[in-house]
Amino acid sequence: MAARGETLVRAYMTALNDDDVALHREAVSEDFELIEAPALPGAAHPRGADALERYWRGWKRNWTEWRWTPVLIEEAGDRVLLQADLWLRATHTGIALEKRWWYVFTVADGRVARQEGFDSDDEDGARAAFRAGPLPG
Image 1 (cartoon, rainbow, N blue to C red):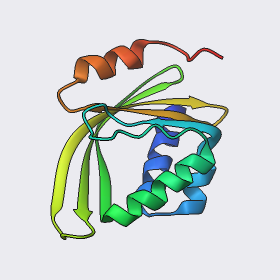
Image 2 (image 1 turned 180 degrees about the horizontal axis):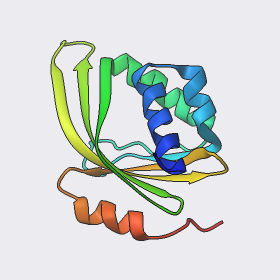
Image 3 (image 1 turned 90 degrees about the vertical axis):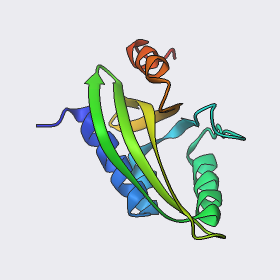
């Protein structure tokens, strides 16, 4: 049986994969924070559910299809470590891309409160963030 944080992260990913805006909004806290991997050009850092909604509108302008597929999931306390393959199809070219990423999620009060991305080569950074313990505040 999946642990509570893992269940929340899987529900969040399902909402993203299905482009279910209502379920996605329900899965995250109002002060949700997304930190894209620094390896991405122009890495975004939206904070709050409204900023996240704007981020996803921009995402959908750039990608016509996407799918996160979990490879590894670990949970400890309020943290969930996820290694996932992300497959995307570009809107303007139709070119498909696939890359493996690391993510560290923080869950609080039954919702996903934070997502931090790490490049596939940065397992050490992802695991360090995963072990860092609860967020201040």
